Figure 1 (cartoon, rainbow, N blue to C red):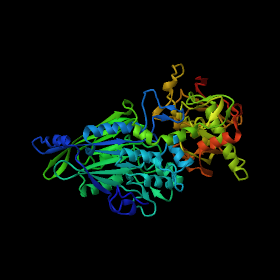
Figure 2: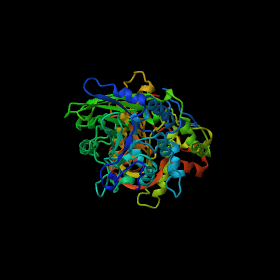
Figure 3: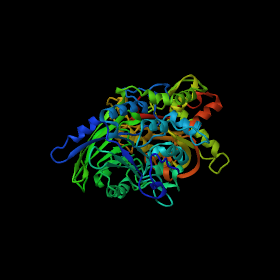
Figure 4: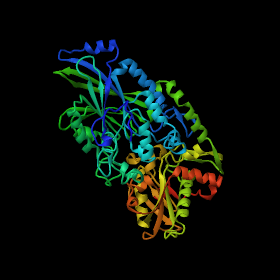
Length: 603
C-alpha cells in the first residue's frame, strides 16, 4: 500500500517497521508566542496546545438527510456533517493559532449515509480511474492529522478501505488491526506530530489509534483469515511505553471503543468492546483519550490510572459531526523537557455555526449526484407503511422486510437438502422515522427501511432454540404490571437495549407478556396453527451482524450456515421492488405477535 510522502517519513508500521514521524508544526502568531511565553508561573514556561476531535462521522459531509431528502433535524435540533465541523475547526484555529492545534478522529468514517454508500457500491472508488471518496476529500481539505479505524470501515471490504486510505492525506491508525499471518500491524499503529513551541524543543505529540475487536465478529466475512483484532488494553500496554521511550511528550489515544466497559457480543471474544476507560485505568502514560463507537456525548470524563495515580481525560463528541471535542493541554517546560501540567476537555455544538461553503462547494457535484440517485422511482406500494410503532406493534413495514428475506432464502435453497425446511425471518426496527408511502416508491424510501450494510444468511435452528431466541429478544421491553399505565415512549429499550437489538421473527405466532420477568415472557408460540415443536428444524433468514454474534443472541452464531451472500439486504429489497414493480401489502401484512399482560393485549 503506497503512502503519501507529504504525511509519512520513512517506513511505517504497515510495512513492518515502527513510527510515522511528521514534520514540525509552527508556533503560531507573534501574539500567541508572546502569550504562552509569558506564562512562567515561577517554575517553568507554559505552552497551550489544543487537540480537536471528531468521531463516528458515518459519511456525513452535508447537513442533509438522504433518506428524507431534506435538511437534517432531530428533536434536539442537532446538525450534522463535516461542513459544520469545518466551521468550528476554523474558529478554534483562529482563536488558538492554527499552529497550536491538531485535529484527529476516532473512526467510523466511510459508512452510514447514501453519500458514502454511493462511492463504495454505485460509483466505487476502487474502479479504474474512479472518484475520490467524498469523506477523504472533505477531511483532507479540513486538514485532519490522523484518524483511527472504526469497525464500520470494514463494511465494504478491505479493498475499499485500502483505497480510502490511499486517498487520505493523513494516516488511518489501528495498533490492534494485525495481519492474520504475520501478526504485525496491518495499518500504522501511531503517528508522532511535532509541534513547534515558542521556546525549548518541539512538542512531540503521539497519537495512538485503537479499533474495535468486535470487527472479527461483525465483519467476519471481510476479515477472516486476513486480519485479527486483539484487545485495546493489551495493545495500548505494548505501544504507549514505546511512544514514551521515543520521546513523546504527549500521548493521546484515538479509540474506537466506548467507555462503559460492556460488550454486545458476550463471551465470543476474550476482549471488551467498550474498553476506553479500562485502557485509561490500566495503561500508564496516556494523557487523553478521544472516545468513539458508542454514539454518546461525553464532554469530559476523568479516569485515574491505577499504576501512576494520574488522571486521564476522556471525551466523546456526539456522532455524525454533531459535536467537536477540544482537549486543551497546559504544557510546562521544566528541566529541559515538556511536561503535561493539566488537561481539560469540552465539546462544541455544530448547530451553532453555518456550513463551511468551501467544503460544501468542494462536494456539491457529488451531493447532487447522490440526491438524484436516491430519488429514482423503482415501483409502487398499495398502501403506506410506517415504522413509527414498529418497536412495540406488529406492523406491515417489518413484515415487508421479513417477507423479502424469507422469499430470497427460499429461492436460494431450492433444490438443496434444506429446501423442505420452513423458513423464518428476523428483522428489527432500525429507524422509527422510516416508511414507504402509498403510490410511487423511491430508492431512498426503501433504503431508509434498512440503513445498515448487513448481508443475508440462512442458519438452521431447532424449535427450542427459536423459543430461547425470542425470549432473549423480549428482554427489550420494560416490565410493566397488569393495570399499570403504558407509555409507549418508556416501554422499550430496557437495559439500554437499542432498537436494532430487538428482533421480530416472522413465520410464527406468539405473545410477549411484559408483566412477566425477562426469560419467561413468550406465550402461545405456534407454527402453522400448532404449538411449536421444540425438536422441529427451521431455517432462519438472518442478517450477518446477528449471525456473527452481534447482540449476543443465543444459538444463531453457532448454528449451521446453509447459505449466505455478499449483497446488502438493503439492495436485496431494492432489487425486489424493481423486479416486482409493485408492493402488494396485502400479500404479507398480518398480526402474528403482540404484547400482552397476563394474557390481555396491551394495545
